Amino acid sequence: MRDLAGIDIGGTKCAVTLGRQEGDGISILCKEKFPTPKDPHKAVGRMVSALEYLLKKYPHVRPEAVGISCGGPLDSEKGLILSPPNLPAWDGIDVLTPFQDAFHIPAAVQNDANACALAEWMWGAGRGTQNMIFLTFGTGLGAGLILDGRLYSGTTDLAGEVGHVRLREDGPRGYGKKGSFEGYCSGGGIARLTADYVREWTGAGRKTAIWDGSRSMDEITTADVGIAAEAGDELALLILQKTGRMLGRGISILIDILNPQKIVIGSIFLRQESILRCPMEEMIRKEALPFSEKICQIVPAGLGEELGDYAALSVAGNRLAG
Image 1 (tube, helix red, strand yellow):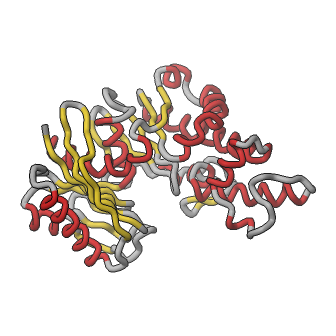
Image 2: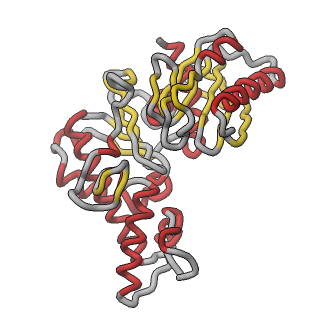
Image 3: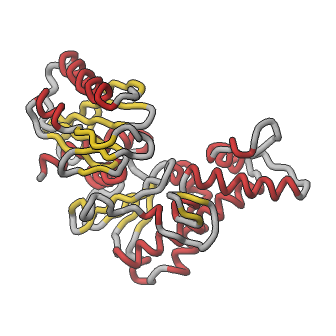
């Protein structure tokens, strides 16, 4: 049995979690959430205070390490957050020293994709694998890589930036590049793709449940597309099928290069698997090396909507594992 502390830093919200690892499982004991303060130093101070509060409230819990999950870029070795897009004021912010000084236990930080990969590998759908890829498929698209039974983060913590890969010469913009993997397979990318499709669709005099004319087309969200698709809207289904095909194209590249046992996908895939899977699999069968494709399972995240909490805890667990 081992107690762990996790800190999940987001652009709008932060969460401080205590968890207990027993055998090959993990349970969340308690959690404190609050809006992310604009000033990074105040934010880190608030996280330290929140963890102190939880430890006083639950004195029987004694974490052996603190794990921090945050969007990149960052320097995991030095413990620095390096101005992520959702936290632009966090430039060179040391997030490890305040926790080490306050609690006198080891601390570690990983970008959110790596942290989610660790969590799914340790406790979720990737448990028992040696070679696994986790795809975020949320607001953006990133990957966490478990290779030969350990996290691979690259020379400067930038391994797994698959959203930047260009799948088509032209297409929806994501990660600063038209036609990128993130442009097709992320919340922002799908919303931009949908706005273009809706303009063409309604311009031809056809109706769609995605947009009723009461707001700007630029305000359409991926959630709008999902709700309309579940109601059987023809355009919404066409858009998600397109997304599924491009997801398959991107995954085919990863299968050919890394030959993984399993690819675990979070967020949007978790919610829209019934629509995305068939076009995704059709494209993978067409594009990927047959033998590599056959031995690779593609599954939704096993830790569900609480993955972010487990992700931070897994960084602490991985720190102790060395």
